[in-house]
Image (cartoon, rainbow, N blue to C red; front, side):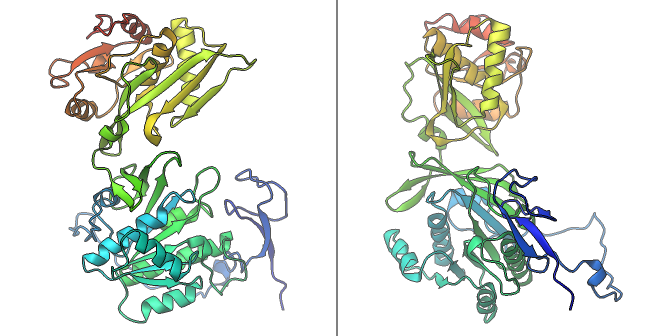
Length: 468
């Protein structure tokens, strides 16, 4: 009998090595490499071991053919359906990740209850909680009377056999994929091999039976979904549930979606009765804004296809430390360092001995470079002590030369600002053209020197510097 091949697999990223080592060379994590057999890792038996029979011929079709749009299962939760591109697609597989306690199970239980109320056959399988615990949450959310079929099991073979015993359900939630295990492997639940094999079986079940399968995934300390990266490639959509524990807002973000736009967001508010939708997140993020304080700027951003207005707060203070602090919440710290360097090199502002604190109010995380100009305005306002105009929105990308570059979807940003009662906007100089912006008064800024000249007025009046 041949001796089984021993390999070493990283439990964080799935990288395989021939020997044990303390630190994974692929992801850099320490003490995550575990010894497994090639068969248990799910990578044994290459093409040389497969049957060498002649394969069947597949049908090839022309690109110019007509295909019907996939049907949708609408959950009646508008923010969730928006992120999914219109609802769940039968036969699709979704992966939902988020921090512990952020509300993943609550959102999916509400979604399954909403689908059940619309006449769909849905199943909720929990591998982390008992049936009594799920029922307790349902009673707290007012969902105890809905016709959702519950199950508490971690054996994947038993779960799939149960789902295929009768008419397959239209939607299934697996909470969570890290607790599932298949008896074809000897490794423990939650290992890379088990997560990969379990996800593959569930995706195959979804495609075969036309069931929408939603997988809940744990996240690492860096906020990435735990387990092998191949799981995110296998599924049709990857959603992240984000939010700060100190805020009641929760943001569902699509980072991959084969049936809709990526980077779309849905905004929810956590309350006593679970998650409620926020149809107009801009007004919510700006609800507690104090327009008379220096260091505060309103940024008109785009999240997916939705314009969102959010307050950016900055504080610049003399540092008592040898190395000044740079604290950032809700934005890229590297981008802040770049903006500070450009302000110091191109505009002569001395920031080397200053502590800088930057915060995006409301718990939203901004990823687009269009926030550069709003951040720079908030920093300059904090340094000079002059508040920015209360009814002014700001957006634009800053180049290393100090110039301000145009950004995409400017009309949508300005339209959202006008709808919320703003009267003016500071925009890149090339975008401030006649007829743009509707009723807003636009101030075009060509470079950061023009921005400083404009903000140096300090009395809230419009300056002519940089006007297009």
